[in-house]
Length: 84
Image 1 (cartoon, rainbow, N blue to C red):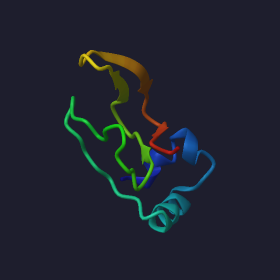
Image 2 (image 1 turned 180 degrees about the horizontal axis):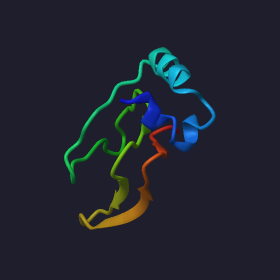
Image 3 (image 1 turned 135 degrees about the vertical axis):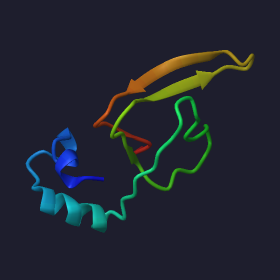
Image 4 (image 1 turned 45 degrees about the horizontal axis):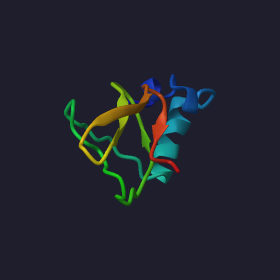
């Protein structure tokens, strides 16, 4: 994670790259990569931390009893997921 790149995201705007580095340390932040099409979490999973999307996007899907999937939301870069 390059602090100068993170400083350009809305969440970090107004924070210097040096302070972003300190903040990431305090938050115990880590960078994780996922393959396109992989599932990050499933309904009912306990999520230990919120995620900030650096690139790509996260799709939130709802699956019904018959296995049909519906796209509920698309989360773009710079946005959080799993925070509630």
